[in-house]
Figure 1 (cartoon, rainbow, N blue to C red):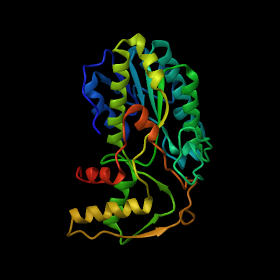
Figure 2: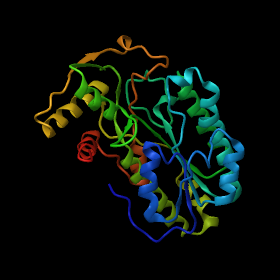
Figure 3: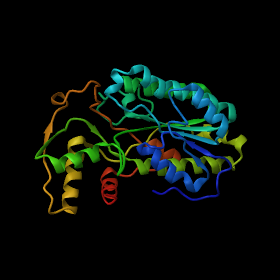
Figure 4: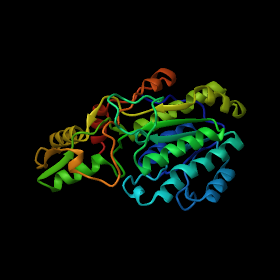
Length: 311
């Protein structure tokens, strides 16, 4: 799906984490909606409450879109203070400032808020029970936003990737060109999510809320509140890391018939231990997103084909 066009917004959109996968796509995709302000880390330090307050008070955004996060899942186990500062405390400060000026907040979270033990895709009302510092800090951020009184939407996603940045797809294709064999985990289930699809979804949601508010700033919080809350937004379909890697390598081999790629070997999670526990089940049920906001996330196979054409 593509976000619809419309008249420019009557106020700026503040985007955090503009150098990240989702943040970079958001800056590009939201630009047609109006003025997008995306300060770098030197201007907006999410580990500093003072920095957050200063930027928001200077910009006075109409929307705050927050994809920025501490995403070093394993490192978070040894740096919990920093993980919580960025993933939880910063969200609380940002939300408090948003409430004061009547700005709406879109915040991105993760499937790691669940324990990954479920046998079916998680719905938004399932009990959150994170098993890692990263997941716990992201859940704390969700709760800080929900309790702030700011009008908001929270989008939980999973397995984000794209043609730029640091992600599983780029790592696998790089290693597949360099090695003879690659061992990939085959017992973790989820759905890869294209960063551009998330950005397009965000633009669609903003426009929908703006239409509901008639572009009146004083009516925006009410419009967002009527549609707000937690939504799951991950790629359609499901797969494993091994199957995702295999499909990516197969498609890329067809694009580079003269290139030799590594043989992929499937392994279990137990054979690839990490400091932070990985969810066996990262599947998210996104039917609420389609039913209430009219957006269906792209099937991971379709998005993979599109991403590979950008190389």
